[in-house]
Image (tube, rainbow, N blue to C red; front, top):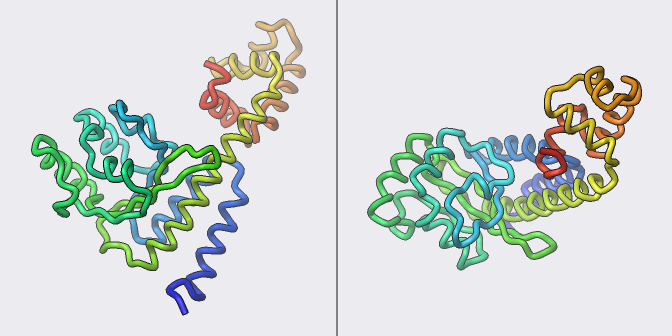
Length: 245
């Protein structure tokens, strides 16, 4: 018998089955918020592994619900550059717990007190990181942070399994988005660009000398191709993919 016998194993399998159905990053985001709460943590982050010259964490984050003030301050005082957590992620591929009071995660004296004060203020002084990679070999990590007691061995096993599937699904969603974007026509991109600029269908019709009905047709097709629920989400996704500016 193992720690992952039912009902624990059944619980994590049901979560993974749910992950496989997601179509958008927002689906994954909402799921991760629920999973974070279910495991008694406060925040999560799914990130690509920052490069050796990276100066900020926000540009490597894929999805997160870290408080915006925390992330902003973290980057403003350049805490990424000497992060012991990041150093650990780069040299190992094994999930690990961390605690701001753990001597093995002591920073450079310059930033130790700043980091401890910042994370304790947001009650995120403890948690765990789970190294992951996608089918192309790109490395990343999933973290669960808060101030609860350290995750148990069983919880670490569950979260490892869950993190692998979440990171893989996000990579699949980006690939689907990329394939869909290849099918967008020039007119559809034009309409998305003007919509992003705040123009209505009537105004776009005048600009492109087309009928309002035609503009709505292009926008509806673009929305469907991008697997978005409305034009606003379609524009947001097109911006994220770099299809429009």
